[in-house]
Image (cartoon, rainbow, N blue to C red; front, side, top):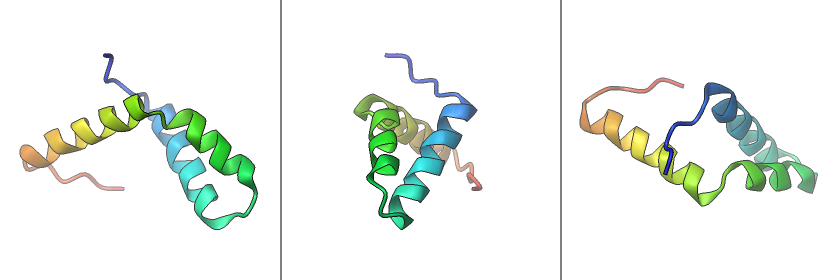
Length: 60
C-alpha cells in the first residue's frame, strides 16, 4: 500500500471535512467520502502516529 498522501489531497480532505460539518448540503459529505477512503485515513493515522512516537508536534 502506498501510504504517501500529497499536500493537495490533505488540503482537500480538510476542506471537505470542515464544510461537511457546518453545511447541510450533502454534496460536501459525498465529496469527503470519496476523498477519505479507509486506506487514506489509515495512511494519515500511521503518519501521525509516527510523528507522535518521534515526539514531533504537528501544527495545524
